Structure formats: C-alpha cells, structure tokens
Length: 184
Image 1 (cartoon, rainbow, N blue to C red):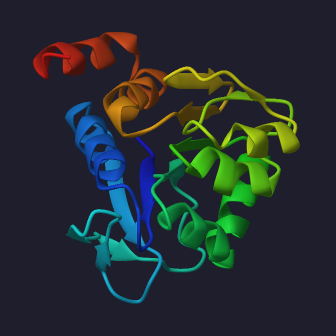
Image 2 (image 1 turned 135 degrees about the horizontal axis):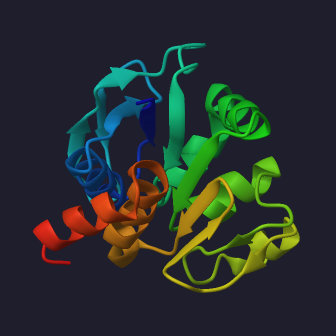
C-alpha cells in the first residue's frame, strides 16, 4: 500500500490532523505526519504541540497515495505559502494522485492552486466565496468526494472526512469496521 502524508504548519487544526491520522492508521493505511519546517515540533491553532514523523524533504513523495492538508488558521495560510508543498500538491494532482483537505484548507490551499476548478467541494463556513472564485461548487456538506479529491468542512467532520479517505483507499467495508469499532 502506498503511503499518505498529512502536512503540518504552525496554526494547524489539531483535531483535523490527528483524528485523520488515527482513523487512517486504524484502517491499516500507512500515514506520515510531515512538518513543513526544519523542526519536527509543530504547534497547532489551539496551542497543542505535536511531533511530526518527519520534516519536509524535497522529492521524496513518489510513493504518495493521499496528500492531506488540515485546516486551522493560520495553518492553512502557512501551508499555501510553503512553495515546495504547493508544487508537490499541483504535481501530484496533475498526475491523478489523491488530494484531501478540510476546514479552511480546501479554500485557502486547494482553490488557490487551481485544484478545485470544476469540482464539487466543501469547506469551513465563510470560505465558500474562495471556492466559487476558483470555479468550484461549494455544497456546505460535512464531506464531499469528487473523483480523486475529498474535502471536509471543519473539526466536527474530521472523523467522517478520514473515514471517506479510508473508504476510497481500503474499501467501504474496512471503513465501516473502523467506524463501528470507534462507535461512530
């Protein structure tokens, strides 16, 4: 199975990053938390500091399945300002790779990169104009899947968001098994 990567920048939404990593690992997926800095320690929007598994290396994502961006502010802004990541996201998507983002990240990151043009997506309430400006259809649903893109609308949707990624990767029955085990 290919590895999936969750990118952490200062101000990321802790629930969205950690719940997603937890659910995907329960589903048997290989998931790596990546700091976009030279330090593995990254502090989230609510002051929780997390040790990423690795720091962002250039050109080592050939085995990537999902590239995942949690939201949070200023986390999403910090992700989109990190050019090596934005180039990776665009290249991965152009090659047909899977991309997922939740909360502010669909609007702040993916829409600014042209990834959501012509797609159906969701995001944190209030960011929908950024989706529309990028040519995406904003639905306001908790989770949306459009081809190789999955988006979520915020912290309370972190588990359904992660379960959608799991279902798309290891199958609905495994996602249902994980969901049941977590009493979702």
